Length: 380
Ligand code: MG
Image 1 (cartoon, rainbow, N blue to C red):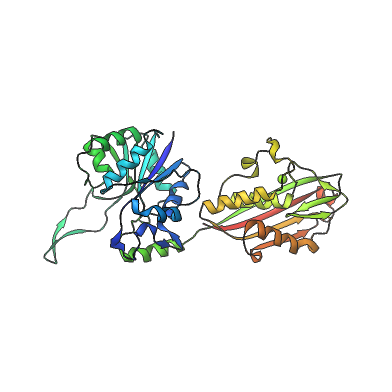
Image 2 (image 1 turned 180 degrees about the vertical axis):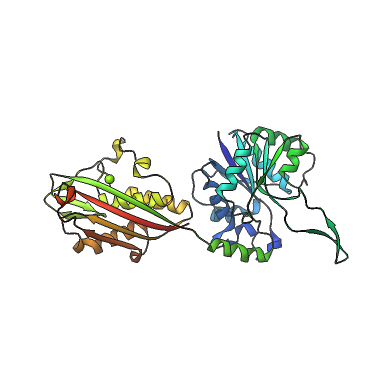
């Protein structure tokens, strides 16, 4: 099952003010469109993304798009939303995904939960529309005065993503006689497709008016804190040095392992993967793969930081504890912190490296190997 997100970003978005089309304006220091693309690709159910842009926005798009191999080259949109969507669907026709999730560029706060519910609904329906049931009383305006109530029972506010089985929505758009159709659900319904309503979240609002940017800034500032832990052990082997946190220390033994056996850096790397729930070193760098033999473990740590950045997350702090009787770690701790900070591209003040012995107890006490523990805190 292949699912592609189709992001509609061809509008001029001038109602929101600020000079630039709203999808290219920054929220929390990042273009809205980049946040939107990232939010969609953050779902494990989304395999790729395609953006439909205005032909005048090629440079703006290039500056805003995140680096991600799952992001397809953009296509140019038409004068109406429906024409832009059609252009995007046609661009996907050859790849023929199973499902397409059509999404507004100006909804950067779509959550993995909403995406999952839309995809799930497509198991039983041709289409699925993220929407919110209306709870406020509705009133018709009569010359600036409060007029008659409008029944709200069964009335929902439509959002995006609007998900569809790809061949069905492509056929519906190709046959659509009305380029001014309100949205894809409308085009789907006109073609006789069944579109399921899926309850969405208020956070998935569309940035439209200037004050929506204030709300978006507040939402972008609300970050979640997550913690990951890592633990690793490597046995001693004959040799003349050990590598810990990227610093080699002359010693009367070495550590054995497939890579450079940097037990401390492995624990830290696993802590970061853990914090973003992306497995561990073994998942990204299988030990069965000979290319990692003797590898510099910085490769692993950089990969974890790359995944962190791809999720829009930041490392808040990391704390590494090395457990061994020998060698003495403390004299090397400042160099280890500096090296980790360099690899991770964070301030050294966010990283701690400390050591303890195990009072001659257990395998570390018998000097059979070194253990390391790490905690990483990230904001996401
Ligand atoms: Mg290891």
